[in-house]
Length: 243
Image (cartoon, rainbow, N blue to C red):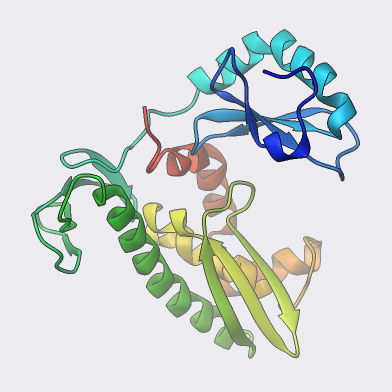
C-alpha cells in the first residue's frame, strides 16, 4: 500500500485486512469508522489525503473493535441456489431453474423461483427480482398513506441504502420518496410502517412530536415497528451478503 496514495487510488482496500476499505472525503472533519453490514466490511473515512497515514494507523489500532463488530453481524444470506433468504418476513429457498423466464414466488412451498441461464447471472437476477417486488409493494403503500393525508406522491425510488430505510423530499406539493429495497425482506407491516413514516414527512419535515402524531394517525403500531427495525435491521442487511 503506498505511503501517500493519490485521489485516483480511492476507494482503497487495506493490504493487510481486506475487510477494511478507505474512503476519501473532502467534507469529513475527522477520521471515522463505519460498519457496512451488507458488504461485511468497515469503511474508514479519510478527511483528505494528508490524513491517510493517520487513518491507516487508526484502523490498525481499532482492529479488535473491527473484529467484534463484524463477528457480531447476523449470518449472511447469499443469493445462491438452495440457500434461504428473508422475503416478507419469512425464509424462502432460492431455486434456479435453467432459462430466462420471469421470476416468481411459490408461497405454498416457500420458494423464490428465479430462472437464470448460468450461475454467474443468478445473484443479479435475484436482486432485480427483489427490487421489483419491493417497488410494487412500496408504491402501493405510499399512495395509500399519502391519500390518508390528502397528499400526492411523485417520484418513488428504490435503492440499496445503508443508513436509512427511507427518505422524503416535498417539491411542488408532491412527495419524492426513496426507499431501501431490503424492506421487501421485512414483514409486510414493517414495510407499511416505513411508507407511512415517509408520507408523514409530507406534513412534518422533521421528527418532532407533531410528526409522530401524524404517524400515529395513519399507522397503528409505530413503536412496535420501530422496535422491530432496531432489533432486526442488521438481519435485513445480511440478505445478499456473501460469506
